[in-house]
Length: 72
Image (cartoon, rainbow, N blue to C red; front, side, top):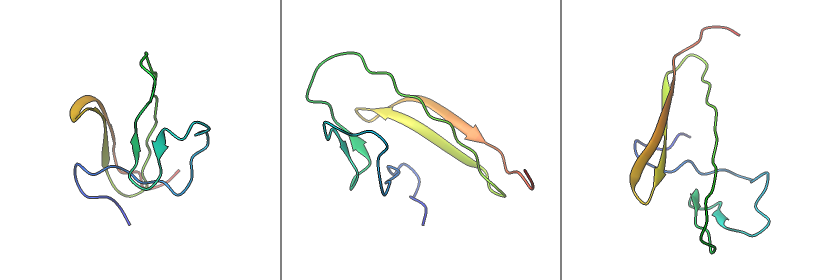
């Protein structure tokens, strides 16, 4: 159900992937064009803690953590 530690998160669908640079099967984005890209994400968990890390070429760029919540 959940990926293991240091594993990409694989999604069933992408909201925007017109050029097909995001591989749904692997959870990896690879651009065919050089440039500057901006990525953003938010995380929230219910009854569990989680840490998500954005990686670039195998190196950590940023991490976010969410503590367990017992109610909304």
